[in-house]
Length: 109
Length: 286
Image (tube, rainbow over all chains, first blue to last red; front, side, top):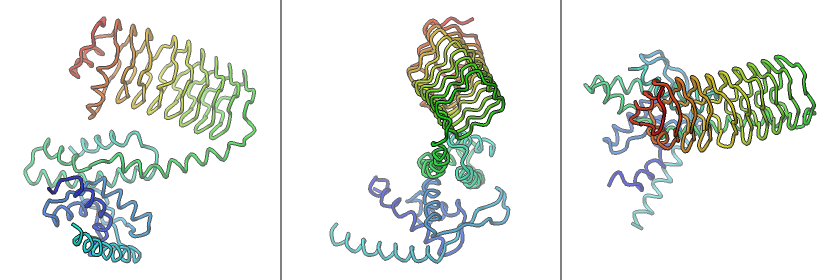
């Protein structure tokens, strides 16, 4: 069941990496991140705004991302998030760790 | 409708106001929610559904805000600690006139301010445990985010005095007329109010659980979004008081645990309570 506690914890635990992944492709703003995650998971995972901003603040504090003001839009100025070199390294590392965990879990489950 | 989203966020964020990081978070969130709301409307959802879906997409914001604020709050407290060694502890200010005095972030523990004229003075973020403010004039004084544990305010003149977010553990207000005094977001569970009158007092978002306000008089007092479990208003007189809970069902549930036995209230207050589907028993409506 896609809504079970285990599944959602597992997904949420990888929020930082999901966001980093999206930012390796392009600079993005908050709502765009949430929307892309819903789209790419075909609605299987809905990242809440609160979870996304916790993650973004944490990534910012760790120096994995920075932000800048984009152009004016309908809803006022938009804050764009940008991945740093350190962030790219973090993403690569997390991705490798996940591949490894997945291999191990596959042998055990 | 965008205003409604904005209002909703005001409500959610109100308890955490005052830190820059939180204001930023609120602004970021509002921009996102507005965009989501517009998209949902464009997809043909009606206003109410779009609003509900938008608000639902926020998730557990309290946890996020807590994470964001904790750091800033800790920083604020450190500023106060640095003044701990100040020589003002246990000082005698009895009867002095210190209008517009600046006592911000001071250590004044155990001082005597009885009958002092402290109109307009600022005591923000100070350590003011066990202070005697009996008979003092605290008109327009600011005592926000201060530690006032064990202090007394007997017969004090309290007009537009601001106690918001201060520590009021075992603080005693006795024989005092509180006029337009603010206790916003304040923990008052162990505060004592004896023989006081409350006019225009603001208890918005305060924690009043288990507090006894028996026989006291309230005029134009705000109890909006306050924690009211087990509050006793037995025999109290309520005029034009407001009990608004915003979006929280919890508030209305707590309201049912308030003891209004023998309380007298005007039709407005009574109607406000009834409006929430709550009919207080044994009250006298005048």
